Amino acid sequence: MNFLTDEENERYQRQIVLKSIGKEGQELLKKSRVAIVGLGGLGSISAMYLASMGVGFIRLIDKDVVEVSNLQRQILYTVHDLASPKVEVAKSRLEAMNPYCKVEPLSVFVSPKNIKEIVEGVDLVIDGLDSFSSRFVVNKACVQKNIPYVFGGVLGTLGNTSTFIPYDDSPCLECIFSKVRDEELETTETAGVHPSIIGIISCIQISEAVRIITGKKPLLKGKLLFGDLENLDFQSIEIVKNPSCPTCSKKRP
Amino acid sequence: MSINVKFFAIFRDLLGLKELQLEAGSKENLKLIDLLESLFQRFGEDFRSKILENGNIRPKVNIMINGRNIKFLDGVNSTLKDGDIVAIFPPVAGG
Image 1 (spheres, rainbow over the protein chains, first blue to last red):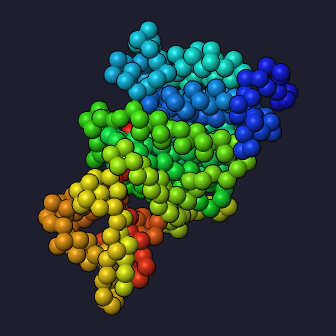
Image 2: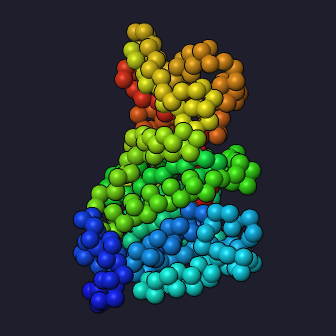
Image 3: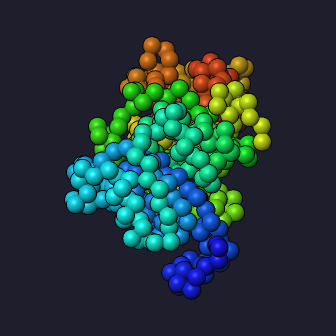
């Protein structure tokens, strides 16, 4: 069932020849199930690349409709999509890009009430959200269900990303950003965001996701990477599990 | 005693440097607030106002000591020891 057809072999040839993916990795991608929470700038790019690369199932979660101010950076959408639900537009675009990828649209806001449905049956979650409160909901569910969570956040010319692996004693999002309140933070609406940093951060998230799916060690486990277009200096810091974290401390690998 | 302080994003822009090796003499029980005060003396009140609000760390500031959020340690009273790495950065939430 998961073996590749001749057409798939041809479609994915440029990545099957990569030592880090290979035929076995490609079959694992085909078998994999990924949830992308948030279909803004980050989520757009993650969705397009993961669908193109041959992830077999992608669940898309976003309640918003396409607005004109999205189009500068959310490259899944066009002027023809204005006022349409993002997840529906994304589903038809992604399935046109790669009919081998099955896309499930969930037009909902992430909340504790629906998070079980959002992460049900997926191998990993890619972050494209725009608030810490919704990320904490996703993070908690991922910790409880042992699902890797690839975090990304951007603002202005700055981005940060990390990979949280709940079953491997790495820290969780809450260990690092506990008690951050969204109302205290700037948003892309007030501070702006450069599309280039979105591309860089989301592509690092994609690389981490593919590493996890193909059985490689993610490179940002236990690290938080910062990048800034203003100096093009990319630097990571070590991050460790907090023994008193309210979300992950009671859990042992 | 030597502490490595790393600055990211607006803090790096404000100070014009990405890290600093602070020599803190042989003081025992050095606390984070002592280190911050020496940074404020060196870099001025503007830097203080970006970090502290009524004596507490501002919500827009995340500080880690050796990869641990100080909110899970003792906040500004967290103790530092020789060789510690302190990272100061803003939470970045956009998507």
